[in-house]
Image 1: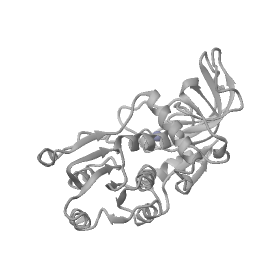
Image 2: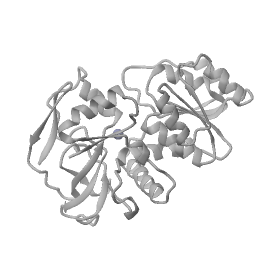
Image 3: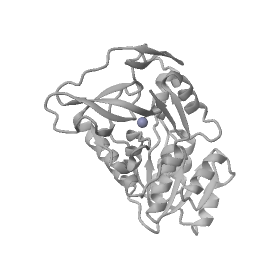
Image 4: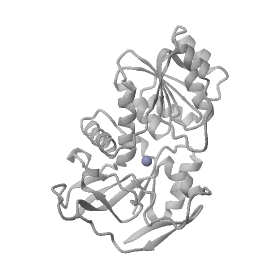
Length: 316
Ligand SMILES: [Zn+2]
């Protein structure tokens, strides 16, 4: 099969490698496509602790496709099932996944892309936000995940304030249901939100960027006894927090990442059900598509975020 191999920082090639065989409890998935994730980018850009070349197909972990073979002791899904798979080498024509790490996609999703891990992540973050009708929810950072969360919060009946850097992202946030939008560069975002909320600030504030500045801004938008939900992926060193402010306001701080496979899978299943039921619509957010041979361009787009960019999908 053909698989993308990252041979060094900023360099990828397509290699012909043996198609993996599903072991006991595993299924072989013919990949239809795989999302490019923000968490893929450090290994593409290069960090001192990574060794190259990376495994064929890595770091693709947002793959979906059709089961074409199953190993021993697999009770489901059967060959032919269209699934999203939590596995880690899906930038390739095939990938193997544990049978209990795949979610069979409902027929309503036929023909739609389904980068499962990314969609499941949004559902898992939303669960820990406990959105309710009537809440004021600020979302700082509107990429693919932030835009999904705007949609989920708005559909839960919350009043959503979206804050982002790119004018395009703010337009998307409004389309997804945000009532108010502010640029991160605006002089006094906190003052504006204070004004909107009669000085109360926000019941829920979601930080969806992974950077220090927006984390600081997010904290300042949380009301007394509100909840700060950190969905950004902070992986380039320690952060500082204004403990005095957290303390004084008595805020709950939630790090909304999940590490258990069973929770990932639960989120993916919930996302599939929500889309099938018409409660979630990620389709307008899949903005860029690349063939496997152009995976380097897909990573570059995810880094540079050209006008109109929210999510790249790679097709083998
Ligand atoms: Zn991901």
